[in-house]
Length: 148
Length: 272
Image (tube, rainbow over all chains, first blue to last red):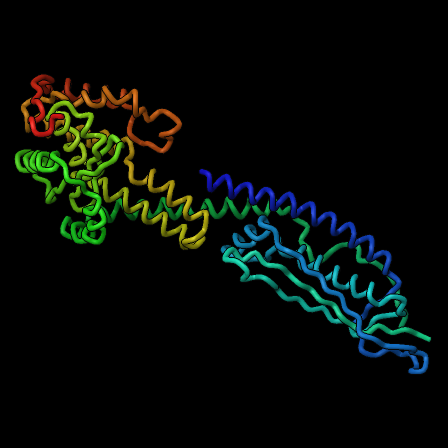
């Protein structure tokens, strides 16, 4: 009985704290995306500006680490039994990637655009303990161009 | 190419469903699957149990009987209860089991039927006994479980359920441990129907051995104060409420015309 109460408490705390953190984070993401809307970040490798118009080209990157909460992990482990889209992890990946892109744009400062943008994802701390509560890292990088 | 700045209207990467809904749908369907498997395997146990020979049962019980033996205590009761059970077995039950009684130090007022004819009796029960007939009834009741093979059914289902949960969640998971704990209690006790049948069996044996059924209800009558299964603490207990059990016993005694008098005292050696 004690174990069950402990378990339910963890789930409830995971859900409440996780939902709160997620809402807060999304609000900030939406706000900053609007702020950076005039800085294009594209996957194209070349741009049709003449070379002499480009003042500088430099590497910019941003990375974000987001942790799984207990509720999401449990829901995902249930999903592992049945198969299908792991909906509880979708928002984590989405947040990590958008946050990484935003941080990359922040690093770009007053550049005109960022080209050749790549996004990569990895897990960290997955084996830190037996329970397998891990974190997700997304890193976005590209070349920031400053025009003369 | 002209760059048009705009934000996406909706987030295509995140499914717009409530996580709580996802959680409950998954939990409930898992629960439903476990229940279905449990019921199906319950039927399987019921099919298999009558077909397990006592030989096979004895062999299987040898796997864990050493740990049961290890907890036996030396007591003046040992020889007496063993000969009492052997006497009942020889004269009245003729069950195909080589019964062995294990006396164990514990305050629990109970006796257990283990596979292979190993009856475990706790000192808590022995301390409350006042006549040989009472003790004979308790043992005859456990023998009734052997006669109906309830003891195998109990172990079978517990085993099945613990296997399912370890399979789903792993051995070190909180959920498995919690289930295993709850199941130990639920599954090793018997259903009301099984208890009532064992009681009826025990009355027949008692009447056969002593020519009367004195003492059959004495013990149960003294119990309610201390071990009423109706309380929250005994939530899992499946023994019929003692009063109900006593009235069932009395009904059988009346119907079959058993004599209710003629108690035999305990031998001196075990009287404190």
